Image 1 (cartoon, rainbow, N blue to C red):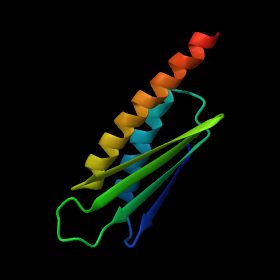
Image 2 (image 1 turned 180 degrees about the horizontal axis):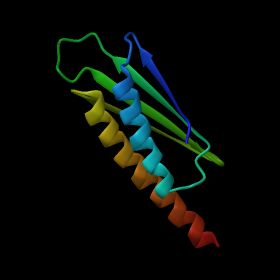
Image 3 (image 1 turned 180 degrees about the vertical axis):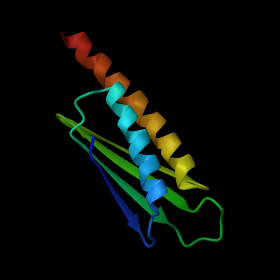
Image 4 (image 1 turned 120 degrees about the horizontal axis):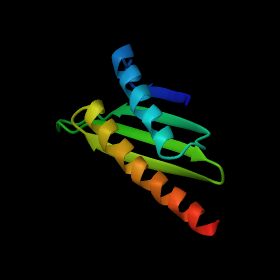
Amino acid sequence: MKVNTQSVNFNADQKLIDFIQRRMDKLDMYYDKVIKSDVYLKVENTSGKENKIFEAKVSVPGDSFVVKKQCKSFEEGADMAISSLERQLKKRKEKLRAHL
């Protein structure tokens, strides 16, 4: 699956981009009709520790899922957001199976 990763207000290193790519590739196990996915990494200018925002948009035929998480690190945000996407994709797959 092609993952478009954009980092806002900073330059993401290659290790982070590879980590996100590997985690997003696992979504194919839950729903194989994913068209594309866009990931946005943002850093808020706040004094709090949880200033990193991970936002993912996954497009499937007829729908799209958007998940936004704010955490201490992008890796933690990616894990939380992708597990949420896994649940949503499983639910969509079950709905489609019920209609067959």
